[in-house]
Length: 412
Length: 123
Image 1 (tube, one colour):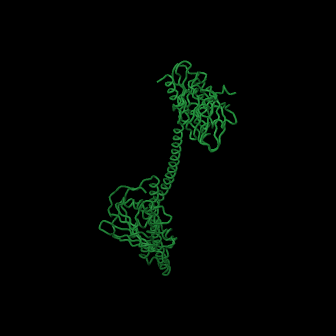
Image 2 (image 1 turned 90 degrees about the horizontal axis):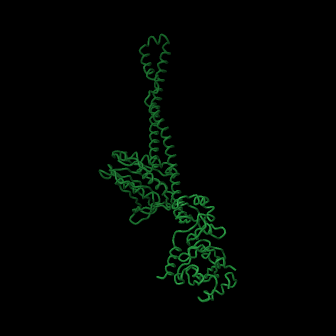
Image 3 (image 1 turned 120 degrees about the vertical axis):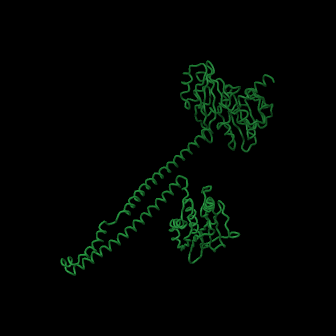
């Protein structure tokens, strides 16, 4: 290779170097510079020239001359990756500047394009901010639920005390008063006369009976109140679990109670549409070992689907009905059957193939059924949706093992 | 012929390699995608790059990356005719050199021109 060839090769190497390079003096005067450095710095050169590095970077790195001229050692790094921004199209560019003294009055400036890294950092910061906001919301909600929970627990405790205490201490005394007076008829009649003595005894008996009735009503009211408080506590627990993204541990539950709770949640929606709901629950069914939150989610979703199926134009039944049966179908399995006379659907074979994103509804997302099927499958059960055709109603079957062993959890 | 002449484009479009070499300013003839198809002697002498080494290369990324910003390359990227002048800095043999650039392209033309002259030589 000739000398000219070697020089050209060296020049091309420097021209195309992907890092901006400049050789400058302590006063900032530029002696050598490669193409990328010019590309990066020209937008900052207000007079169109890059004779002096400090002048070009006066606004972006204002302390540069002080740092360089105040540097004592003959060799070393003076500035390391100082970032600054430059006008660019369509977006500003971000560069990192380093200055190295390589001896005497010779300094080497390097410029790296860190635009992508800056954008990535901004994306990461935005994501962190969003996460912090979300965590803040969760914290606030958790705090609110915690405070409500404390209040409800206090109410529960007070209610338990009220339920345990005798409602009226005077009642046992009054109950003894009637028999006591009857043991003293002569003294009573002598003092009050026959008629008034009889009237007093009748009055005492009536007061005792009335107070006994009130005591019974009181106990009943307290019991109902306690049940309602327990129900609210359960709902709060479910909400806490949803917020924390977890599930409640599996518990032993009676199928009838599970259905009752799901119907209670959807009662308003069903009632509003005039749907007559009848239930038929086998009283001898054993308990289920299930994740209560998830199973209620399934039953509520099924009931919501039924309600919405009546909104479709194809539903022309005079009486809107939903019949729910909970029955044993094998020694170790039970089945919830939801049979409605709503719009139904047309699918080959009559059984709807449940896959994520597929729906029977015009406006459905297809996620509800898929989630239901996943939850039921995680309890080693089956979830099936059938219809004899459009206008023929639909039947949803949820089969669950009576004694379910924990399986893999599905996420909704 | 001067870099700021009003009929310069007429001349350049007809000029062969010898005519381009005869000008006393730098001429880079490119296709509209930036590929170099002519590089005159003036420019070759100042940059230290031979004609053969730059032909068929992208001028803005492979020959003179100093021009690859909104001031020069982006102007060529915009559609339409172009006739703009600006003072710029080239790193001829690594030495920052003040130059005047003229960016030229006719409407719907297949070729475009970047003309350069060291500012010391601007008449």
